[in-house]
Image (cartoon, rainbow, N blue to C red; front, side, top):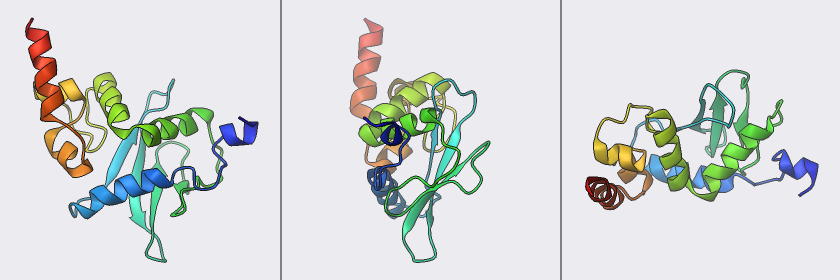
Length: 153
């Protein structure tokens, strides 16, 4: 991979993320948001789905140092002082949203989608809550029950 590609400058690289979040948005009228935490960071970055002036979806990045940063409707990360860790975590989400959500939940103890603390054992076992799993089209009960049964042994 060329250095420019490593930094996430490929056009359309994050289009799948926009589609994933837009599908969740279509299933409800609540704000669609993901929380991500790049490796080595102590704070989360919010990914908020918005509709731009042309009526197309885009994702606004929010957190320290992300003023005006977004992923365009075409899936391209806007030019800002990008960190390789940010690009890497976005790629992890694109590659496998369910796996990322699970690892985020286990690491932080909160749901990557709504930010709530995971208190139910089944939710904690998968790393995200039942309502968010349904909204984002992810498995929930099947995984959680299997993990609970394994832990009892």
